[in-house]
Amino acid sequence: MTASVFDSPMYAKAFPVGEAGRLFTHSAEIRAALLVLGTVAKIQGETGVIPEDSAFFIHRSAMEVQIDPAGLATGVAQDNSYVSALVTAFAKAMEAPEHSGYILHHTRPQDIADTALMLRLRQLLTQAETALSALPQNEATRFALAALPALRRTAIHVAFDTTPEIGTALAETLKLGAPQPITASVHAISAWLAQTAEALCPAAKTPHAAMLCATVTAHHTLLTQADDPAAARLLCLPHIALGTLSLLHQAA
Image (cartoon, rainbow, N blue to C red; front, side):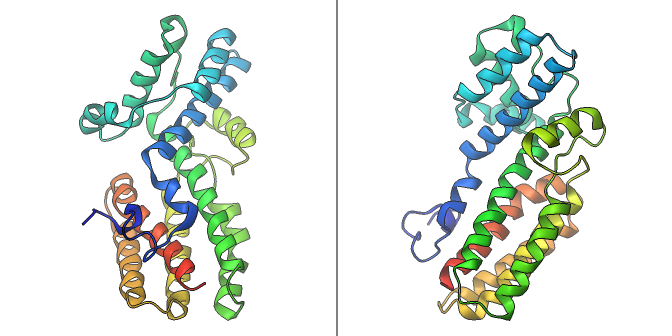
């Protein structure tokens, strides 16, 4: 038995999630964070915060470098965040100490992680919309689809609320909303997912649909009531997102 049915080849057809499963992999998490790190460096180079040649090198390297997730394990255990370990691995892989010292310059690691998560959640909502649109249209599907534009507008955005000058430029470049803390926004996305799962559960005519819906609801409750939002997102959000997408696919 795997830790999760959603990343199990054996259960892939019983609990289908489509392309959404790829959004909750180490590879997707690291690529999103590297995109944010590279874009921040590019902005800092353009505004004179760091040398322009270093910014160019970091930005280009962020699109090309390959990082082994297993190599981040010790750093993650020490810092409870993967970003610092990723920066160390990224700097080593660049093999250019004259440039790599400017990675994460005057930037909070949590802002990188939070903005990277928002990039992945934007894709998740797009995939959820596609799955919803493919279903027979009824009151439940129409209600869920109608709520999406406002949710995207208010809940998909960059972090960087303490450095709005970088955050604003980053938002424009990545086509995300204006900088603000992400906890309330993640809760709003989770609420939409949980409500959609509950509404579509009856249409998913599989023996485990009701249990899957209950699992999504339980994880949403844990997420929104946790004292440590970052840890709650790590432990609960994948189950909420993939549980909902699985129900949508089962309802097809």
